[in-house]
Amino acid sequence: MQGNPKEDKSMHDFKSDLSQEAVLSEYLDKLYTGKGIDFNRVSDLNKQHQGIDIIIQIKADEYLIDEKAQLHYLNNDLPTFTFELSYFKNNRLKKGWLFDEKKLTQYYFLITGIFLKKGKTKLSSSNDIDKIKITSVNRSKLIEHLSSINLGEEKLLGYDKELRKTDSFGKNTVPELNPNSEGLIFLTKQLTEKPMNLQLRLEYLIKTKVAKKFHYVVPTSVIRK
Image (tube, rainbow, N blue to C red):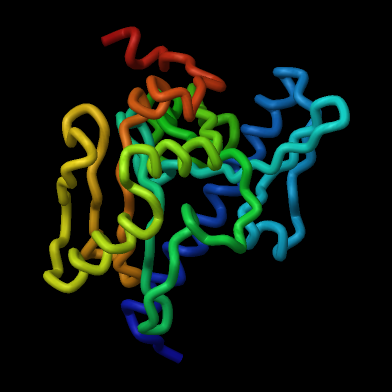
């Protein structure tokens, strides 16, 4: 039976994303183990939907981590990361994961700068990975910081509503953020979900002390250049 070409491609992309996520998880598990971190990878779907990919144990304390990876930008080291404000599902606008009260996430592990070994362009095995960067973001500190610069949930969702009304796709600057050194709001056109994201610079997150460099290694391919 021949299906809808767009639906077939969407399902293929979805399966490909899941496959790459599984490969990356395998690599990350080795990395965490090498760092001597006591952790458990979450397999329960309900917990995953609550924004928990791994649970790190430090003495008597547990930390709930949501891993966010730039798997669509392999062999690139982007200076920014996007935090989801809203998206469409079944023609209904939904709240994104940043302010979703159902999410139990305490920290985001932003996985960027995913470089594969020389000549590789597709992630098929954990052995394909050369280097990655991980930036740890304290979710509550991030939300508190945004509120302190007048970008609390209400203000950001207000911008969201205005920009969607005018179909302002692409980059949208806001007076509270320097677009060159801090961030902006980005409305994506090409995805079915039409996500609205707060795009923030990693160095800005670190400078404001809402984030820390958890694992930063410069790829050998970049050193050679």
